[in-house]
Each structure stands twice: as structure tokens, then as C-alpha cells.
Image (cartoon, rainbow, N blue to C red):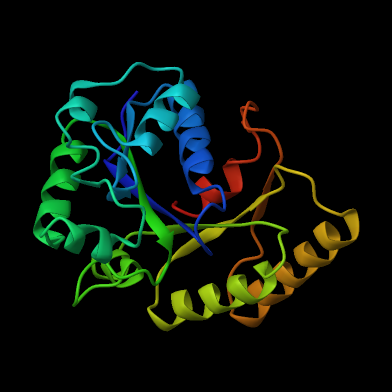
Length: 230
């Protein structure tokens, strides 16, 4: 089975909102559909050697680490200090170059049907003195999946993220609502209603996928997001 090389960016309203799980689960779904798939973590901070998030993606995909994982193509920037990308790079006397990110993306696109690109932190995290993550996505015309959750502050962060996405004319494929964890039912319901209302207010399609278990295949749930690409 083949398809034109397709690239999807996965972004979150904040750090630790579930981007890596969503990226890995969506990659697994595409693998189960018969496609060749890999993931790209643009920047990983707070670890050494193979990126933690790439290792998580492969576990969720039920695949071993690839040569692209071992040689750093799937995570071109890896920094030990757990901070925003630009600061973590600065701590070791380095700087994140968008040309390096572009080369990693181009290399992977020649080998796989699908490439899922995960950033670091929230959408407006700085990569360097010139680029924020969302501006990089916009300049490369990458369609975006936004990950949010019911934790306190999510309504505000989601609305601000949607406003930033809208301002940059980025194609939003939909929102993944990450329910993993213990959240009061009242907050889960109310936040979901506010997310749907915000999508309408910002003239986006009301596409929300609920994820509650990192082990589930989500075969049916991913279809609305992927359908937006056609």
C-alpha cells in the first residue's frame, strides 16, 4: 500500500499534555492500516542518547528502534538540560537550526508513507531567537493536530492555542482530548463543551477525538482527523 508522503504535526497546549502518546498511538494506527510510518521529535530536552519520546513512540507502535532512531535522524536535537528548546541548546553552547530540522524531515519523507512530527512543549515555545515552534509549522505548511486535556487551565490554554493557529492560517485537523488520568467528571464534561464552542468560534471544524487509554488502537476514532487531509 502506498500514498503520497504525508506529514502531520502534533502540538499541545502545554508540556506533558500527552503529545507523545497521541503521536505514538496515531502512528500505530497508520501502521495497522498497512502504511510505512515513522515519527520525528524535533527537539528533546532532559535526556541523553535516544530521545525518550522516540522510544515511547516505538513502544506504542510495537516496533524496535530503527537505524534512523539510533543515528539521530528522528530527533536531530537532544539536550540534557530539562528546559525549553532554546535554553537547553544555549546551556551546551548550541543553537537549533531550522535547516537541520528540514533535512531530517526530508530524509524521513523519502523512506516512509507517513511522517508524524512532534514538537516540544506548547505551540509558542521558542526554538531559537528567530523561530517559535508554531511559526516553523506554519512556514512548512504542516497540518496540525492539537492535544489538550481536562486539567485545570486547559480551557484558557486551548483557546489561546486556537487563536494562535488561526492567526497563522494553519490547517487544524482536529483536537485530541486526552482523558488519561483521574479528572472530575464535571470538569471533563465542561471542558469538552468549551473546547467544542471554541472550535466553532474560531471557524474550525468541530472535530474532537477522545483518548482515554494509551493501549487502545483508536481505529475508528482517528478517521475524522485523517479525513480532513483529503
